[in-house]
Length: 291
Image (tube, rainbow, N blue to C red):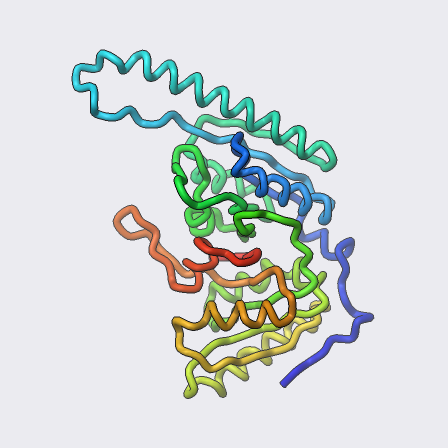
């Protein structure tokens, strides 16, 4: 069943912006992380939100190659100087890029993901991603997976090249779970600005009827919030869910997928479901994730 929303009831950016008043972004000094910062600035300007830049880095742990500790003191001084220089460079980058929006700056010598997750108490949205995933160092970079699972805030993951989120069309990856329901509410400011929203559930053949009920109910809920939504149920194996979501996104020229994030920590490593892992590690477009 295809449902259409009366264009006269759509909620535009200036009306939806009240739900996002502060955006948090980790700022790194290197060129490879600049797409994230530029995306964050675009987003803050669109929502008329305050952009909170966080410079966070901690000293790299010394190796065990010097058992006598002869080089330890020198290395500590050099590493401390490097951290301070990086934080200053990150601040300069932030102040230059964010000059056109309301902004705040915080700099801390701390584990990046942990401190950004803590500071999320004062933000409505975290902007992550927008940088190559190779060579990510946890003492210097705020790893997106940790932010998603620890921050208790929606995380907007930008593709490696960054870019400006248009949000004219959105795909909502539906699964009848707590995480998906939370993601739906967290995504409302974006869904209300979109001209076309497809709520899609991917399932096997014997669950098709249940999926129709689920997606219809979600569409009706979104319509009551001024969202131009319609339902879509696709029969496919579980490992084909990401492919089907991206097919739908390509078909409507959507640059955002909304999804619940499914994962947990096991022996110090993050373990995720297949779709969550793909949206985190190889995003083809923006992804809004909630856990």
